[in-house]
Length: 224
Image (cartoon, rainbow, N blue to C red; front, top):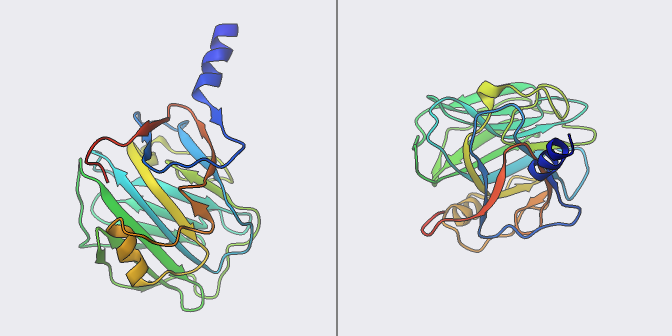
């Protein structure tokens, strides 16, 4: 029994202080509904605009949830999905899908998603290529305490994970802003140039806890 408890503790690592993850990746090696990373945001506020940028590497060709934000007001407050045939974004319990963007297996992909409540306009960028702009959830706000999960899609606040939506692969360079950053700043992120880090999630100063079979590893040479 003590061995089982010890093993469980090894699979759950909590950090109470922000960590600099520059040069590192989260590795999700198995399909599951128990492996995820919970991120503590740097600010707690109602959100009326969002930008999220991250990089992922996977050989899975079904839709996968790479990032899920839930709040009391909206369980599907904000989310980004890798494609089976199209990329997807959730905002305030509504969804939009984007076709014609690069779909690459076993290669690093840079993904950014933006949304502005004032217009409802949402847009994705994949490896420097912008999508069309689509409107959803205009005038709405994501209100209440935020629950931010990497690697799973929340169907309840902080849980309700579906194994068939889980992410299998590697995630890196996760940043989130409480506003829409410019196309120039997105391109700088895509090109790994200097940019202002996220003020809600900053990969270089991120407080997080990981659960289940998730590893923090060094980037392999040539990655990202």
